[in-house]
Each structure stands twice: as C-alpha cells, then as structure tokens.
Amino acid sequence: MFEKIINSKLFMTLTSNSLVQYGKKNWKPILCVLISVVLALTLVGYFRGYKIEYYENEKPVFKMFYAKWCGYSQTALKEFNKCKSDKVDFEPIDCEADENVDEIKGYEINGYPTFYLVEGEKKTVYDGPRTHADIEEWVNKQVE
Image (cartoon, rainbow, N blue to C red; front, side, top):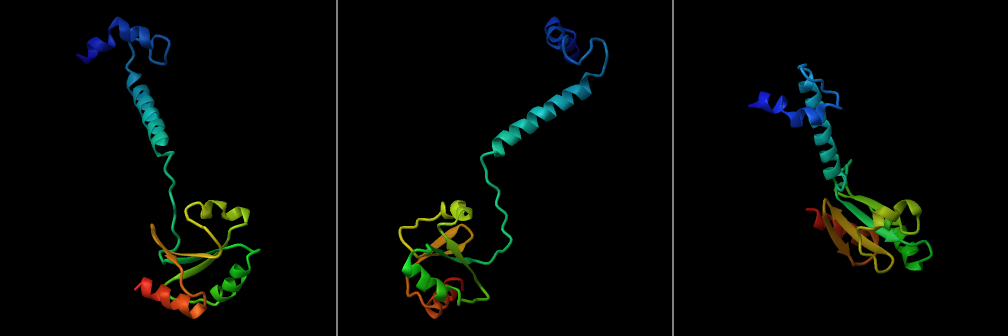
C-alpha cells in the first residue's frame, strides 16, 4: 500500500522539485527531518503565549508598593525596612522605577503604600497598622 503511494503520479509531482529523488530510498530521513521541524514549530507556537517563571525562593514574600513622593510611603518604608522574619522575605517596590513596571502589573494598587503577602499564586492584601512589630506579627500568623 505504502509503495503504491510513493510510486503514484501525485507523489512524484509533489516531490519532483524537492530533495527526494525518484527511485532512491533516501526519502525516509528527509521525511523524518521535515516532520520534526513541523512538530518543533508547532510546539514553539503553542508555548509562545506562556510565561515561564523561575522561583529562586519558595518562601512567601511580603511586598510594599510605595511612591517616593508620598509622605505616608516614606514613613511606612522606614518601619518596613526594620521587618525581619525567618518565614518570609520582605521586598519594597518603588512604583515609579522603570524596572518595576512589569512587577506592578499583577497587583491592584489604588494608593500608597499598598502591602501584599504573596504565597505562590495567592496574594493577600495587608491593611493593618504600619509598624514593623504589627507587620511581623500579621505576616507570621498568615504563613503558619
């Protein structure tokens, strides 16, 4: 059956201008390469829309989004920088810095400062007191 297809006029017409030469058995490796290329291009097109993220640290992160011009942010930033925990990393994010534009996109920020506890895909807003002791206490309760 397969030999009939290969020897058919349609197959000869389709392959006469290609690398496959009639009468030789070298069409199999070329066909495998062509199929591999088509499969690779299909997979690249499929996965192009997915963003692969690499997490260096599995610990939750408590983020403070602030603006330099905001007085409340500056006061809270001083307290935020005092925060320490073995269970959570603390990360201040300047919302006016160009390098943080992509970071900010995934969060709803309606004012400054805005606090989020991020555990994998879960984002929890913190709206409590802005002293380092209160922040540490709340964060430690959340990650237990």
